[in-house]
Image (cartoon, rainbow, N blue to C red; front, side):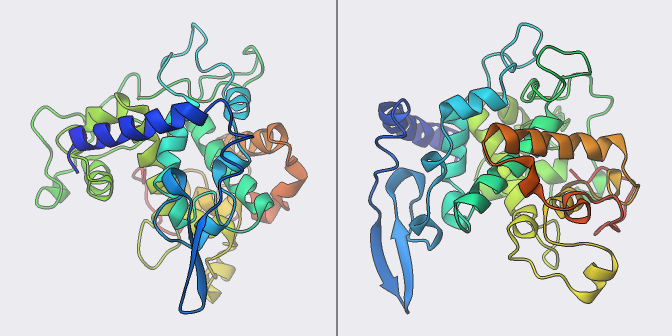
Length: 320
């Protein structure tokens, strides 16, 4: 799909969403799914938010348990005068992006508790990676997620010629960090663009121009393994990934800790309780509290962190 087609589709869905965005509790929760059975398996279609005959669409959808006011609480300072992406991020853009992945299980796997925990986990990563909070910031250091939508002072263009035959760098393009889970390097823009059917290799700037696309790229990264033999962050969190003996010996278990291993590897994992890891964990726990789940549901230390985990892909180069 060309970017113009994506934009047109987003506008069409946005018009539909605008009708119910102020009344999610009353209208979206009452949506009755279309249901059919295929080979003994129940499949559902809930229209715009969870479309396409999926077992996951038979569960609650994200707007059944997460509304505008909660998004505002989690990202309360994103439009403060000192923020760097004022007016960019909003709840509608997130829901439009999530709707593409809900039929695949994003925020729709398991019961309501697991669904809320996954949302808090994903947004915890987002909040941590886009924060401009610090120790004495108004509201505390965890209240400043979605402060950025791009790397402010890139030191390089992030063009790796190793991928010149598969994801060649476009003349003049800069592949610095952009988005809700910032994307770096030409090969990551290329892969995300292929998946989302948007030409991000030639136009990486689209990510910082369209909040829905920025959220889509982040959710795509959450839902997609780095390597086929490894879990996605989603699979590692919801428990559909079954660790091998080597994973167990490497202290990799289903849970939040392994999502950090999938997304960042040895940048934050296997180094003990370092600040970079603890900051991500703290955002997750903070969001669990704000969403009414409670940080006690985050699990024990060995599940919550990756302090002692060996990296799936040991490297000194940024994996995101």
